[in-house]
Length: 164
Image (cartoon, rainbow, N blue to C red; front, side, top):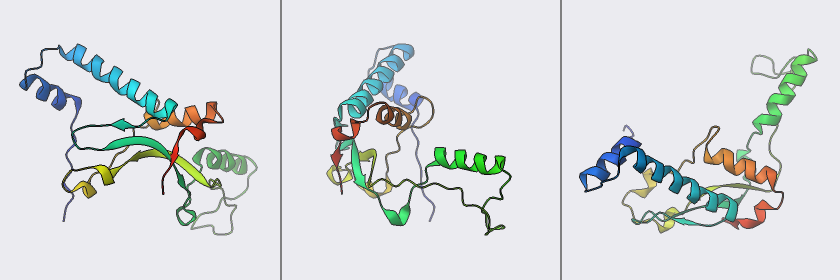
């Protein structure tokens, strides 16, 4: 059975807005959306607040979860540094072809990790199990903003609730 994916882009949202009586220009509507999303994410990330998305979609917030040691997470930044260091020293790297090489993957060792969480249990959408929330990545992405905030403020983790 194939997965059906519907991605709505800004153009679709703007068309829906205008078809339902919206009168703002495309440029102004886009600016309003960008400012709203940025302000909402600032409150979620910096203040530890919860965003109620309305329309029975439930809420999104940043939370702390226990680290699942069966699914360890790789610290890619540290792993790449170690890999370059080993390569610079001329040491062979571990791989399937070279099982005796030096292992270079570094795993996170903390007890909790902080991430965005969609409270699906509060959502009233039919078939909500097939949906997921992915925060944006990249230079201007929200995952990057969260990571930068956590690095810049050593007590930031105290702002977030723990979820099991």
